[in-house]
Length: 432
Figure 1 (cartoon, rainbow, N blue to C red):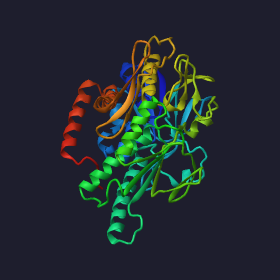
Figure 2: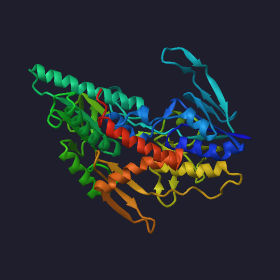
Figure 3: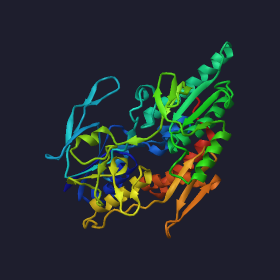
């Protein structure tokens, strides 16, 4: 019985472990081990809702150990330090508790097949001061840090305003990057500012005193969408009171301000960097071919070019589709690659056909009631723009599809009902 080790429990890694566990693991054809440094899984495309306080990560998180027990795979918690491809072993760092005590010592796990699903980390592009002075949304802990900073900042600004003597009362928030993460976070923060004022958490004017800016170096927000949809999104954000500055490249980030290449200074109590991603540093230490973003080059079989026993999927993989070109770092790509590898590695007679990526489109949330995006048709690849309530409904279904892949239809349906009830009984955002 061979051992399949999956490093990374993100959208692709956890789905692959679940599918392989249900097929090969329960049938005794393979030992499937999922490795991750965190104890729970949270769907990364919704991290902006944690940062805005809309969703509680403890409610939506999936325990890896519980998922492993129910679906026929094993979970090993630990941060991966390296991979020895000669001896086929994955080295894990000691597991240290919050109080500093060592729970588990450094250890290693042997493998026959290794799947790297390491995801991505923020790319600062060498901008001076960025790494030291900004917040990011790479994981739940960082999203919670942003949320707490935002709520505390609003309360502090409200107290200063009540005390008087402040020339420019309120709080300034700068979001660097006009892609999906930056746009979605800006829209949700605008809603959160209004909700916090409604519950008297702060006494600021949500538009005049909670000043949100998006700085985008390109000429349009959401460059992956049609220009008409990008302009529509920009109009919606401006209607919410959000300032959208395109053709604005960041030159430096200081403790309380962001400076662009034209010499303009934007005051900022909180700066969020959402300008791009790259693969984790570990990818560059494996002796495998990588691109400038450290993504591992893979063949159409999703195998690393130098090692057929190593696979890479999701954001850390550099796969160039013969038809679509380079596959973008999106959750739908990780989902499709997980489904493909589950068949390749989990069946008694593995598939020989290469992986083929299909672009189903892209949807971007613009707050609780709006969204924009484009859907790709099955015939001829024609693209259909969508917006408004329909786009918002389709956007919410993406997460339900992820839940269904992990839990099945019945449990996904039960969780949908439970989420609806919780939404009716609780404030729209976390208030503290």
